[in-house]
Amino acid sequence: MEDRGSEPALVLVFSGKRKSGKDYVTDLIQNRLGSDVCCVLRLSGPLKQQYAQEHGLDLDELLGPGPYKEQYRADMILWGETRRRQDPGFFCRLVTRGVWQPVWVVSDARRLSDLQWFWSEFPRQTRCVRVQTSEETRKQRGWSFTAGVDDAESECGLDSGVEFDWIIVNESDAPSLEEQLKPILKLAEEAADQR
Ligand SMILES: Nc1ncnc2c1ncn2[C@@H]1O[C@H](COP(=O)(O)OP(=O)(O)O)[C@@H](O)[C@H]1O
Ligand SMILES: C[C@@](O)(CCOP(=O)(O)OP(=O)(O)O)CC(=O)O
Image (cartoon, rainbow, N blue to C red; front, side):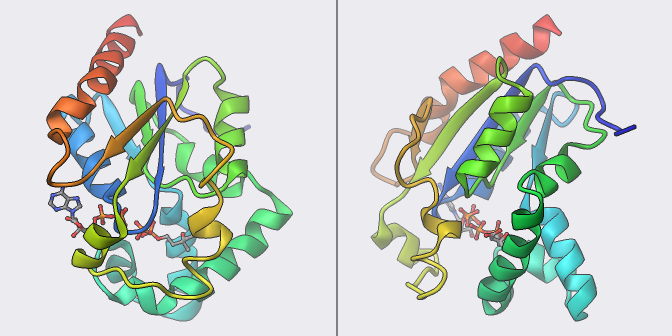
């Protein structure tokens, strides 16, 4: 039998282009709610772990925001897609195993199949959030266009066809993240209280 922990009270599924600030925003949410209430789940976590092991790479570097992971991204995408073709819920099931906190924040949905998995497992609890950032700001954070990555499903799979519950604009001239995240944090606190 699968070790599923307990049912979440709320599942916030985040997506956004690379360097949009998905990790930054989801870390902020966890800091606000506390790690006994909120767990950040990265679908790329088990993917990177397995990929690093098979290829003799530095997992901490692969997990970090620096340039190291970019050298391997295109190949990791292909590697992960092979897994997902066999079983679209493979990484979703791995990261949710044993999670006990009431609020789950998935930091990196990339494909419709990721969203569909959470919608079908937790239809009442799942909400989708997009982190939106201009190319200019992403460039300032180190992004540059890479063919095979920025034009592939990994980056474009959720560009259209999804009605997001919230869109967070992560730009210096937008309302503060604190302000934009207020309704999400309120919902999360209410959901956690009701459990
Ligand atoms: N609002 C922000 N203020 C300051 N730095 C930010 C902000 N958003 C993102 N960053 C920085 O930009 C870089 C990319 O953000 P990250 O969260 O890793 O993006 P993603 O996970 O979408 O690739 C990181 O170094 C992060 O600290
Ligand atoms: C192979 C990947 O899982 C790599 C994802 O790495 P990160 O989640 O670190 O990416 P960003 O935060 O957007 O920079 C992508 C995939 O298609 O599965």
